[in-house]
Amino acid sequence: MVELGKKISTEMIKRVKTYCDQHKDKQVEFYCYDCRVTFCMSCYVVRHNNHKSCDIAEISAQFYQNVEEDVGRVIKITGECQKEAQYLEKIQTEFLSDVDAVKKRIKQDTDKLREFLDQQELKLLGDLVEIKKTNMERIKHRMHDVCQHISMLNNFKQYITEVREKATPADVSRIGCSLHDRANELHAIPYDVDFVLDTIHYESDDFAQKYQCTDQSKNLIGCVSVMPQLVEGTAHQNQGVNNGDEIPSSQLQANASSSAEVTEIKGKF
Ligand SMILES: [Zn+2]
Ligand SMILES: [Zn+2]
Image (cartoon, rainbow, N blue to C red; front, side, top):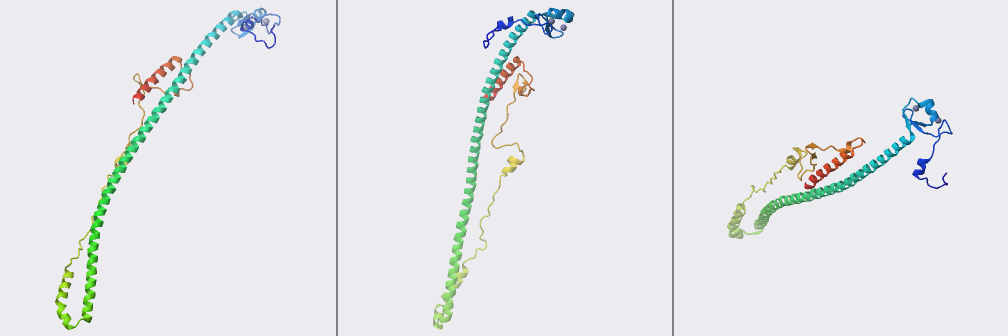
């Protein structure tokens, strides 16, 4: 008898007597391996005498021993699993740090290339501006000369019209020759019908053809890939693919150490 609410010790439980289901006044003494039941001496005589049976003290001792071993094994495997979890945390952190480092390098290289392209664009636009400037200067000078010519012609035309209308025969006789000479001078100013501006020629380097159309995988900046995971000359099997099958602890350790080697290789990269 135990007081209510008091904890019963394991030793006490082990000493508690159990009575037979069939014979309420008799203690259970045996276990039948064939029927997987416990029973008393009377039951043995009636039902189990031809079966494989044993004393319950014997089988319970075996049970307690098995439990001890199982608990020990569970503790060991739990420890290994915790080690594995810590290891996974560690390689996850390292991996994410690698991802960030590569991301940074891609960004740096892209910025460098962008800067280089900007310089190339500036150079081309600069060359174009020079050509434009030279041609604008040339056409401006020519336009100036032509406008001056038109102005002289207009002035002369107005002058000789007035002379024709208002001058006396004496005046005409006096200035006639010089007017005619001036008309000849004005006619002698040449028209430059061959005046042309430069023809701009832009030869494209066919950037798209070179870097995109020929090979879609080609990238100007670089390429991102994974290093082959070679472990002792064979391809490393991804242990995450197993379908919930229990992995023996020895194999877990082997995989853990081989993954560490791969991490080192990646680190060097
Ligand atoms: Zn019985
Ligand atoms: Zn039996």
